[in-house]
Structures are given as C-alpha cells and as structure tokens.
Image 1 (tube, rainbow, N blue to C red):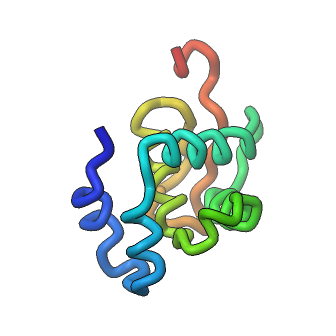
Image 2: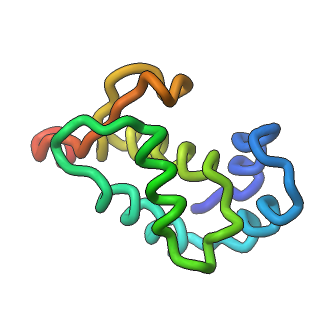
Length: 109
C-alpha cells in the first residue's frame, strides 16, 4: 500500500513548497505505477547519469505531474533500485556521480 506519510517524511526538506506537497498528497497507487514506467522507459542496459534521468522524466511527465518535485522522481529511482528493477553504479545520494540502468533479466526476475 502507498504510504503518503512515509513519502512525506522521505521528502522532508527536499522541496517544501505547498504546491509540491499538495501534488504528492494527490498521488494514488496508479500514479506511482505510471511514474515508475516513465523512469523504466527512459532506461536501457547502458549506464545513464541518474540526475539526467530524473530531469528528463520530470520534463517528459504528463501535465498532471508538473508540480511533482524532482526529488520525488529520485525517490522512485531508489525504490526501483531496492526492488532490483534497476542497477545502480555509485551512490544514489550523489546524483552527479551515480549511474543507473535497467536490471539484467535474471536480476529483474
């Protein structure tokens, strides 16, 4: 189940604008699936800078997500990594030095 309180705590201090908070509060489970699909669709098996991926997904996201802060997309990348759906090279806390790619089929299974 989608835990909005946990999400708010994870994003604390990243973007405290009222618009961003309200946009996050409006998200449903289906929105997370859509956002995760946007992230995964932007990846392949080549390494890509995580910061570029989040920025690209932010720009390409549907209009209803325009108030969602970039930090939220970064959080979703972390969730995808923890679920072994993507691979990470580097530290997810250091976006400029971190790269991500789709997990190999045996790891994604």
